[in-house]
Image 1: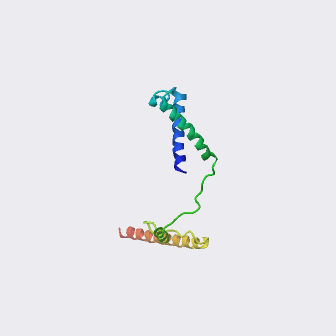
Image 2: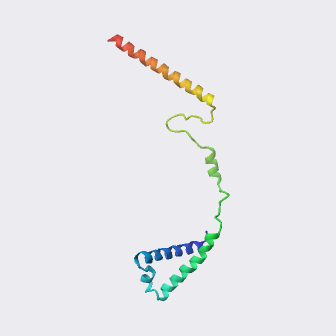
Image 3: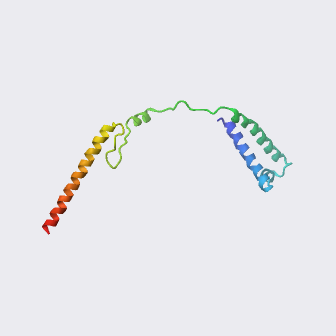
Amino acid sequence: MRTIQRIALALVIIGAINWGLIALFQFDLVATLFGGQGALLSRAVYGLVGLSGIVSLGLLFSPMEEVDEVVVDRTDRARMNKLNFDTEFGEETDFVKRPTEFKKLDEHRIQKAQKNNNNNNNNNNNNYRKK
């Protein structure tokens, strides 16, 4: 958006707020600030707001700009090649693995957990025998 369009949009917003104040509270902020509706300065502000509305019509009918190209400098590109997806909590599951590999991994974890449970049960039984 060009600078002229931004200024025009700001003046249109000011005009819209002024009209809102007039509608809701019967209070004309521009007239109050610049010496009444008939004052030269107030009329100039009203004129600028009107011209801004005409300029803003171009924004209404112009197609939205899309950015096709993203500029990446070499330091960003080097940083992107060395991404680290690890967590502080240890290994992460590789989501590229096939379902059979997941089954093997799950079977291994289940066997390991069962082995730990058996060891814990044996230790508990040994503790009862000693007493």
